[in-house]
Amino acid sequence: MDPNAAPADKPEILYLSRGDVASVGGDRSDLYVRALDEALQQHALGRTVQPLKPYLRTQGKAGHIADRIIAMPAHVGDPGMSGLKWIGSKHDNPARTGRERASAVIVLNDPATNYPVAIMEGGLISAWRTAAVTALAARHLARPGFTDVALVGCGLIGSTQIAALLQQFGGIGTVHLYDTRAEAAEALAARLTAEHPNLGVVVADSAEAAVRAGDVVVPCTVTDSPYIEADWLKPGSFLANVSIMDVHKDVFLAADKVVVDDWEQSNREKKVINQLVLEGRFSREALHAELGEILAGTRPGREDDAERIVLNPMGMAVEDIACAAEVYRRAVAAGAGTRLDLY
Image 1 (cartoon, helix red, strand yellow):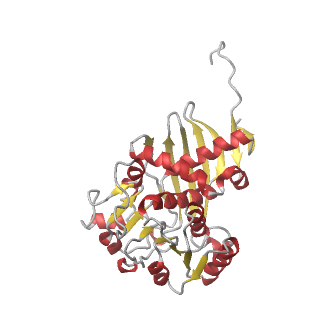
Image 2 (tube, one colour):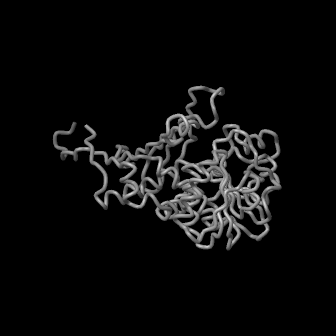
Image 3 (cartoon, one colour):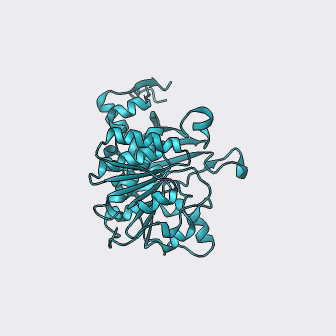
């Protein structure tokens, strides 16, 4: 150590609980939509760093597809922020433990030193950034003036999707809900009716009935078996394939446009797009665009009211770190959270 060097500040980490995140706007869509618009454009321009995310599956191939822990590192901005989301999921948590299916923490690192500067609850951020991607994409990919939204899967992720769409689009008239657990759909329907008295809420008797009614269709399930068929989607519909495994292969092949958040992330892990690529029936050339290209204006979004458009959002660390960095900046400005000594 240089004896003439000025003493360094004592390193601290800012800890943000879920309540702290919510207190600075992390429980609404606006923060996330703004952060993601910029981050996805930067990603499309090659100005982010994002290694492929590894999946930790303790039960291997014998386990449920939704049972895993994922490490999601990224760097966003200049100088920006680096960080990691560590997110675990067990498909039966709600029924078995009464807890949410997914849980997460996010660690942020100052790229000037690579020291950690914040650790925060990541479940709320993860749910809202996922919903904000759908809302942001809908601006460019949904038919203008759409009125009907179909949601399949009425848990935390699904309910957040509906909340974000209602916050970002004032013309939604009816929400069509379906869940294999009827009580989940009924509970969300009751909440939406209480919060939005002028909103039409329909609990469908099947996934097909809900999907066929939707101008915007959002599956949010833990299924490992595709069930949505191409002819369920009406002309002009936009499908945000949030839970990835819900759609049959013919949905991608019949779509007028297929959009992803990131091609490399989508073309792996034997998901449906990857299966089609391995079969020689889909390719990077057949892809219409990455979402960031559309946001940046280098590729068109919807060009015809009758187009059926599919968004396949695998979920990117770039999205989480960009949103978490904005939460951190707001928390510092507001004096929120708890300061922890690193040493």
